[in-house]
Image 1 (cartoon, rainbow, N blue to C red):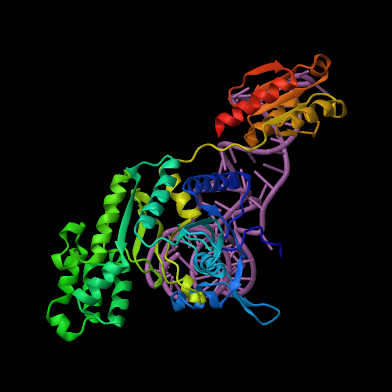
Image 2: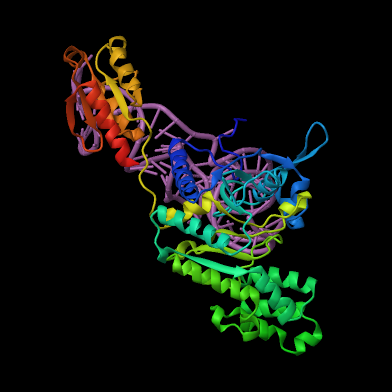
Length: 437
RNA sequence: GCGGAUGUAGCUCAGUAGGUUAGAGCGCUGGAUUGUGGCUCCGGAGGCCGUGGGUUCAAAUCCCAUCAUUCGCCCCA
């Protein structure tokens, strides 16, 4: 039985062209996060399993986490998400860090589940978090970072929409307005989360099942459904509209409008799966009809740092997967043609490998990335190999070139050739490389 | 964990009333053309038809199982 060449289920091999794409995405992420003052950090891929038991739903930890026992009998998990790790790091140095603390990371995360479009077992996720800011300015800033990333990729506002809601507002609605108890509210939260995926009738039936008979008789389901249809804060009943959480949402949306983010909207159905969110929550949706789904999400989670036994730190963060990012960029045709980092492919003509070393090393010492074919094949075969690799320039070195120290450099994209000195060639390929960036 | 679809050459796919030695395009490779790619022409390599079992004189083709890929559900970090 031959060994399989496939990568592990739900995980990807990155050949050079795949890695180039990933690096391109990461570079944009880094550039924009750093533009807002966020600093990169990192941590081990393994964490103690209990880090994920404290919060998160039961099923996620028990069924969707890679977990094992190490040789010392410790229960260990491959990180399924980044938020607990960064919270742990902040808690560890709670007193000495300077706030507001702005951090970002691009960890790879693992979750054990059936792979499907946009969701794999291993993915990389940009996490951007701000610690130590109570007010909605933190949310506004993070949404600007996310919006800035999309703009940096060349996206326009018609390609995506930023949906915003507030857990506090939903709590107000469920506890104060609908007078539900804790268990009812929790069940309803999960139900609203998938409201857009199930038929109206099923939703009504499940909602009815949550309410007590007296509430049902009072028309709670219809009342709820009416609320969930509302698309603008202004249309909420006055009792809700004047609540503090609703006012905060309004201020946030106003602030975003000031920042020229015109595609941010109130969406009462945005709940986010995790229980640890405590305030504003948001998701960005791809408006591509072929891929109409949430591509990232985040929100305020003020309680997590406090779980480590230190004073709580107000926190807002978001996570953005590389797979959903890539799906978005492909769907809107926003990916540039990416070429290898090799600037020049040297084609040797005749038996000149040894004497050509001097000029080849000279090119490298001047900063050019140079690959040498080294097979001794006929020139046409060597040119084909260079073109197939996507390398921009081929350089020919033979007896004639070495005699007058003028080398033929061919632009493989246009097919045009010129003869230049080594120094001039380096300057040409460097110019091209900088134009490309 | 549940359901659907699909597994034939490196890739995309033809090929069933079951019947010689399983095909095409692209790609790869050699030559025409031993100092210059993409076009053209001529040649070549490459397949236990996903795997195992069953039915049959005979299976890529029919049946069962299994594995893999993929889409969706559950769940969503």
